[in-house]
Structure formats: C-alpha cells, structure tokens
Length: 86
Image (cartoon, rainbow, N blue to C red; front, side, top):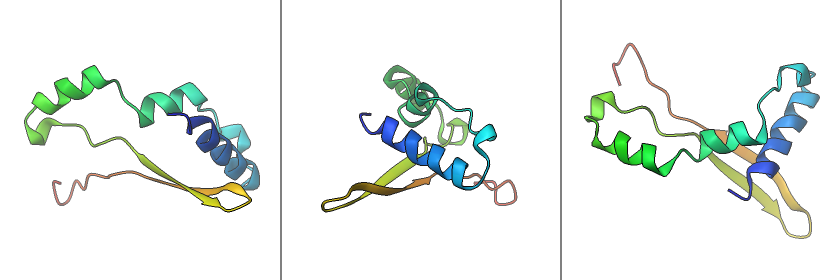
C-alpha cells in the first residue's frame, strides 16, 4: 500500500502527457480502496458461489532502475466476456 502515491503520480503523469489531466479525477484514497479492498469484504466475497463473485481487483507492477528509482508501471485488470459468459 505504500506504493499507491507513486502509482497515482504515474497515472497523473500519463494523463498530463495525453492532455487528459482534466479527466484524471481519482484520488490516492480512491486508488488505495480499489487496489486493496477491505479484508472483511474479501471474506464475504469468498463465501459466494464462483459465478456470483466480483472480478479480482486490478493489479500493478512497478518498474525500477538502479540509480533511477521507479521509472514506470503496468496496471492490469481482469475482464468479463459477456459473449463467453466468463
């Protein structure tokens, strides 16, 4: 969870680069809640039948370079295909 401000800064930098900073409205707290859902909610979700469970939260990988610190990130998430029903 300590990396959330770094991830947020990378997302902000991408928004600025793409000239879409006006659309970047997610806060650090929003990102933290999305990436690290409440553990109590996880226990409830685990009790649900597989077909009723929400998709897992997004995942993030941070790239670091010696002497340069954090230099990039990859954020990925799981999708549901309505056509495949999975």
